[in-house]
Figure 1 (cartoon, helix red, strand yellow):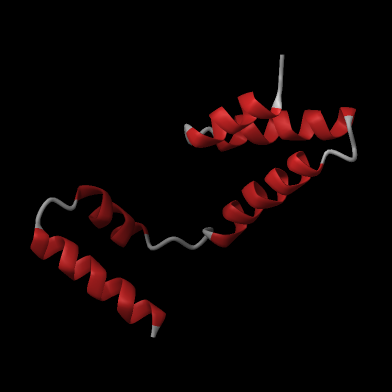
Figure 2 (cartoon, one colour; figure 1 turned 135 degrees about the horizontal axis):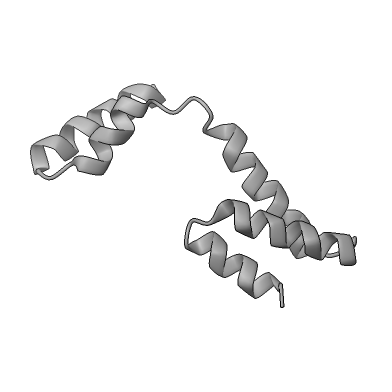
Length: 82
């Protein structure tokens, strides 16, 4: 049974496509379901918002192991916000 709870679990596990599919099915059955509408907007926005990820820095972030690397990444983030 495809429910908001199952979709939420998928979303928390990083299974965004699966979660979106469930939210859309829920919305087809109940077009006024506010939770499904919000979730679809949220997940769709995440996809659009991060289309141009700096893959080099993403990989660096994933592989960081030292305080020095963390500080370097932190400086890069701060530089991007200014």
